[in-house]
Image 1 (cartoon, rainbow, N blue to C red):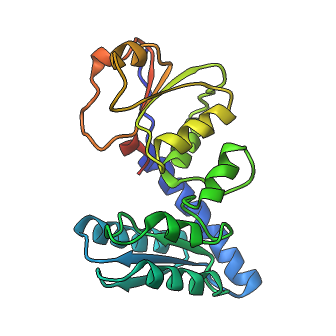
Image 2 (cartoon, one colour):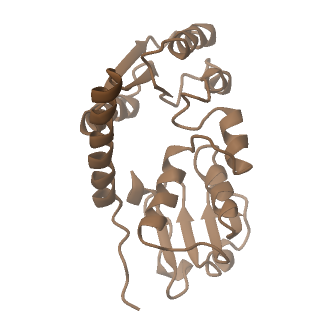
Length: 234
């Protein structure tokens, strides 16, 4: 069978063009520009790069980016206070809390402070629960991107065996819920899974949601499988 490349980068540009048109209509008809507020705590190098990328893509989408930079020594209380202020700011339409946070900051408490109406990264526990119950909510960005990419290429997951490697709160777990909501049969593998190759070779769709490059090779998959690496959708 001729392989199909799921071109996430190409599709993302189509999405940004659509968002740019929609943003222009909102600005014209409602008189305000949507604003994405991003909070970053500390000077983590990778996080700084992500912030610059988010600024770039906000511009592509025709919306404003507002970055709130806090010092590394900021407390949980300080971060929570900033989030509450953004929750109450009528001009801010979405909130992102860049993670990882410094170890002394209670990350989940901060995530759960974000209003689910502005929780565009789907990190609030209530957002996750609504997603799991197939109720309207913002989904975690990368899992949501995987699902939209599969839809774009008309790949129906219903009845298929989906093997997910990774169980993080922002990747493997929400992706498994999204797949279940589409009637897939889901197997989750992680660092404690035994005989992992025996499971991945059962997959019709294989999603690798871990931070290790080239962890999976052709011996892990059966012929005709649909591999989905998170690199495809960033």
